[in-house]
Image 1: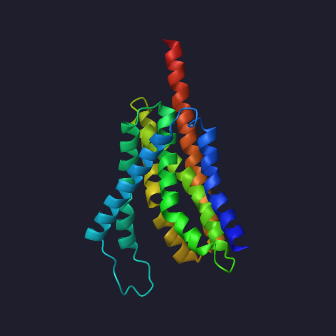
Image 2: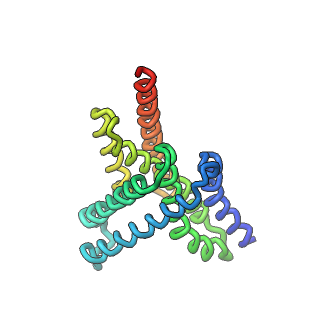
Image 3: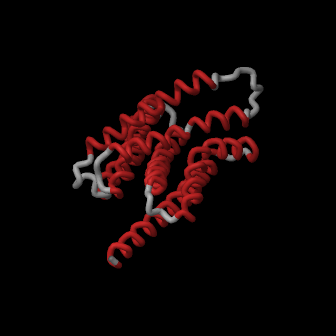
Length: 232
């Protein structure tokens, strides 16, 4: 029974990634090793972030269980390094524009999934007692996949010279919200006492809004580019 529960959690976490790889056209484009490179960039970026956090933002003790908003804000600021990691991937991988952010987002999310989810699922989901938190953990990995693809899309849009200047502040605000999302959710949890399922639903709503807006910006940019090309 415990192995069956572990298999369900593993499938719930990993199968959507395989479906995304197959249905997005990346498999036909033979982008597997490019996704591996994106995953390697994730590992290097996280290592650099850990070094910065350990050097400049050491863990403080004796907080009394209260949320240190300033400290958490400074730590969330380090997550801006993720945007540099995405930008490095997008500029270093040779592929079509729409394939670049899919490779970056999927490779990044897959590396995060393997590094942060596999061991907790292997140790916890195989336990003798059933716990919903492992189902929630698997569902959250799917949310993270959408979030990382949307973030990669926004970074790609920001790097485009043909993006309407009036839309650049929108892209920058969305990128900022993506980086500071953990802080915002942490404040909501401490202020409103959100339960685990409500918190998961909040992540779904936030990620869905960012993803839809990023998709609309991408569709608008590609449509305007095609019209400009046909006009010539």
